Length: 475
Image (cartoon, rainbow, N blue to C red):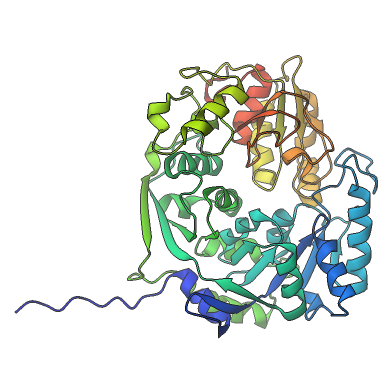
């Protein structure tokens, strides 16, 4: 007699958090979810808050909403409200006024906790395992690294979340990406993110909630996990998440907005179940051997257009399954490259370390170690922008700022800076830049600027060489 098929009843981590926050079913695909935290920044926060004010609606839970100044702030030393970015000052002052009127917590310029939202939230314990967190920023998915359900929204949705502490959300499908084994030396979470993009494509996660799992993921520290989850939006995913473990709990203990005392014990008891069950079913599964991943660099105008650092611009036949011909040809023309061109030795005019992807203290430590005793090549403009004022202060206590300055880097105040260009500071027309940021779109860092994405170590090594360089090969 044949055995009956086994019925799988397990739940994914995403299933569990979704179920805990379901307020009501809207239809078969959509639920109304409870929102635990709302994070705002000055580029979109004022829009949502002013709209609420005009409608004579209050923020339902002001203690659960946080505002930071990060996107359009000037990052040069001695900054004020004045910005290089057109209308930037108006965004800052309007957001400050609206946040104070609504009674929200604000991390303003000059505040020791100011910084990029996706950097300060984990620093302060605003994001917690099992919580829901939204922000009008596509890289909110970063914070899934701590076991939260965190995703980016628009200003209108932010207004709704502020007024009701709920959001109507269409349920995404579930995807698990398992990284088996151990990442080789010098291979970072940024390299892994670019490798996945090159392999799966920028639409590889579309319509899905990604859970990262496997031995290589468990071995990553919290800051590296934040880098990996950060670029889930580049995969087109709804968001990403990693099951919280002792590394996450240790990271959060004692943080200002994390539970304390008896509340911490209660939270820890609840957090122990925040993992996917052994028999949980995912709609899509990918398995990657960590040994196959090496240092990476982008060559084109989409993050998926990336290759091994010691590789070359691919022939179209090698990427035809992923890239439309028009995108491939446009990338070659825009980047002024040809198939077969080696990435190593490609001259650069600028190097940038910063952004919500790679601006945490561990990123700066690794880059500074590469720069120690070395100088930026003549003609290269090199800038380092810490992700938060806390990171900046910690780096200065460790003397990292002096290592950057001695090497020839500018040392800046915290903010998004030249991760994106919106009419303010840029690297210059058609300048070739190697950058630790997350997007290499056309004109992303300035008018027709050509951006190559890489890890902080690769950015530092390239700044020294004056061309794209492999940090493993430095003398």
